[in-house]
Image 1 (spheres, rainbow, N blue to C red):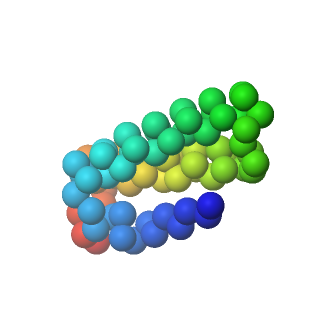
Image 2: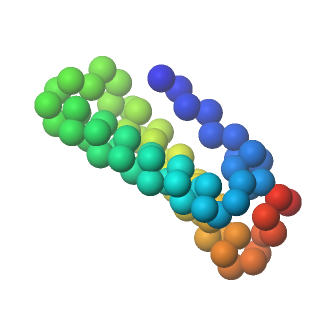
Length: 73
């Protein structure tokens, strides 16, 4: 299940929307790790991809909060 994180679209989102998306991805990451431990995960690379998406979202959120990149730019 490839997930395409459109960085430009995320940069135009509000901080609260990004935080909500981060929480959802963290829950999904927990579920993927659990399924992997139970040997029920078909593609373990999904964990790596999800971790990277989370890092991208957190970076964008930190940029917005620091004011280094204005919202919507």
